[in-house]
Length: 303
Ligand SMILES: [Zn+2]
Image (cartoon, rainbow, N blue to C red):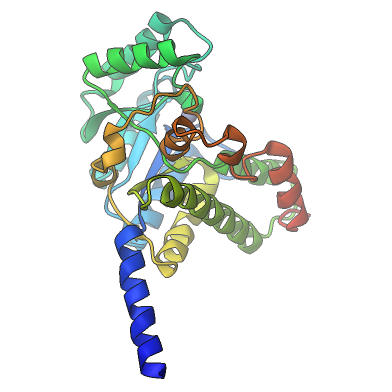
């Protein structure tokens, strides 16, 4: 009986691994971000490269906000490329495609293109700032078609989250000369991100009946520089494999641009919305400034 049960659970494990590959790629937006109270931009880049290499992550993608580039910062992008990581386009001035005219948005992307397309390890992927893909369906369709004509592939994410808020709360605490408990901050960052990943994976399993190769949205920020290695270690503990963004973008969902203007929660949520799942069910509870700030304060990270 016991033997049967064990065999049974092996079969279940084998079956679930078929529908749940648990593969995820890491991507970092807004590079090269400016200096902060915690570290200079140059330090951030070095720490991030060191952290990724220390846990054997061979490839990630940095979505460049091109108006951050000046001579010194350009060197940081070259360092990422030199470490084997890839660079992609996150527009020049980071404006919302839902709020400006189509052609203004496209010129902004092209302006960035001219500054980054000859950098080593540049790949023609484009990611919308704020994940705003357009103000309505016509606008989403038009921008998609024009970006494709420019030679770009869509740098979608499948897991949205507020890593940027955690990082900014942490940096603010340092600015305010508060005593910061980095171990608590690390746990908070890792656990919040893991919960978001599991949330969007559960939506995928329900909607697609499988776990796609995920693309995690992160930012080139202080929290990532300090904790991304711990995040990778925890993900692996929970059965995830880190894959390259290029591999993740080979997933079938890369070809499914869902017919919905609801793109700002990422591709998995957009597919679910296009199949009738209410938008209110497609946003993790931590993607709320007030809720996340209260949780950060309650965690005793900064005193
Ligand atoms: Zn951004």
